[in-house]
Amino acid sequence: METTSEMTGHQIISLFPLGVVLMPHMEMPLHIFEERYKVMINECLEQNREFGVVNYDGTNISSIGCTAEIRGVVKEYKDGRMDIMIQGNTRFVIKDMDQSLIYLQAKVLFFEDEREMVSDADATLAGEIIHLLKDLDRISETRRDYNALANLDLKRLSFLIPSTEGFTPEERQQFLETTSPSRRLTKCRAILKTVIQRTKMNYKINKIIGGNGDIKALL
Image 1 (cartoon, rainbow, N blue to C red):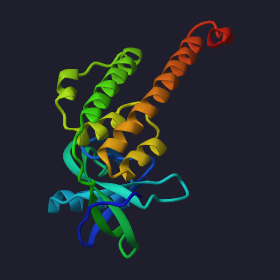
Image 2 (tube, one colour):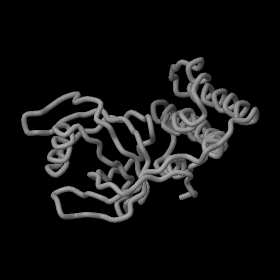
Image 3 (cartoon, rainbow, N blue to C red):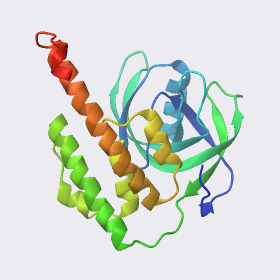
């Protein structure tokens, strides 16, 4: 993780390891079905508290994650399962794990971005990124308000872009750990180009699968 300009004191939070990366401001649906997480989510709802989401690749738990605010319970099932909508809030780094409860807890430090002055170059870069996002949206047939994007501050924009469809968990983790909005924007421009090419290839493959299976279409 890069050096941060501001960190708060240690706090204990509930931890939810998942095969995804949650970003600040990012909305994400979750289906809660494991007993330990039913308990954890119900406690969070009752106590109006957040929990931490960290990426788990099946072997390792990332040391840096993001807190999740429960925005609402979409559906409850008779067996206690539930569908919820969460939104990312504050990033944290895990300092110590606690396995004393049915679910994981961790002692964490919350951190924020470095303090930066916005330059003309940053504004130009943001414009380039929004143009690239339009290219990606044309491929995936996604609609969004680009005027609203243009009015976002650079920090918010640098988290929103990697929250879109097409970025891998590994790529999103890079953005989560970067503490400079301008460096995140630079990463956005580079990785968006890769995402566009990857999305084009996926659409070609899906078209072949749904068509006659002629691999020459990929060449």
